[in-house]
Image 1 (cartoon, helix red, strand yellow):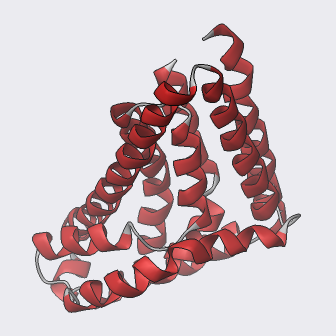
Image 2: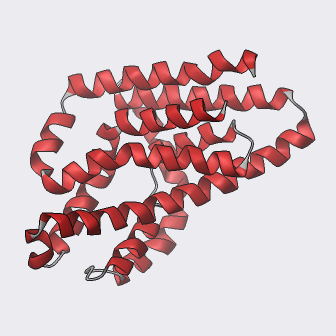
Image 3: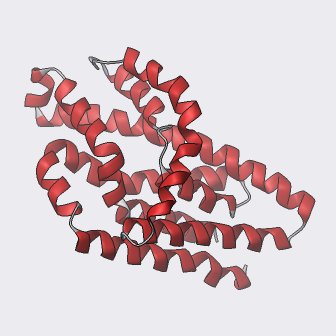
Length: 226
């Protein structure tokens, strides 16, 4: 059922925030301090700019999800119905690997992030041209670029979206995944140092990793009834 995929994706975004701190915490901090003092001084205006960053980032996630899941749907139509369970299994395996990585039990997962580096080398200069951010369209544009930052967490969510076999459902998975990451990254912008200390603790990361491993079992548990 599509809503369970979206709920799982949202929870994945929430509990994997420890990884977001490592990958995006520095970016959020840099963007925060690059804003004009007048923007930072007014909390509501700072939040508006931050939300535009995240709106752009999530838009890129949705585009990637639509492309990946739509392509998977075409392959499923050619390969037959049994391929859907295969894709769900692959998605679950990726989530388990991610949970082990975040929990500190599987360091080799980090190599997955290298897959997106060629694209990032091309996009990263575009992001630099938008700095310093002085307007909301600039914030949204930087977010669009930021969404393609190589990240094993995002790639795992994309692999999870494969199981939907539908462009709009895959975009929905990535939308809710992105929404799940927003609260933590907003707090990082407001309380950067304090949030990093809390989420860097081994116990916090281990609990988050265990929850992600549990979430990985959801699509397999639901598969027989679909």
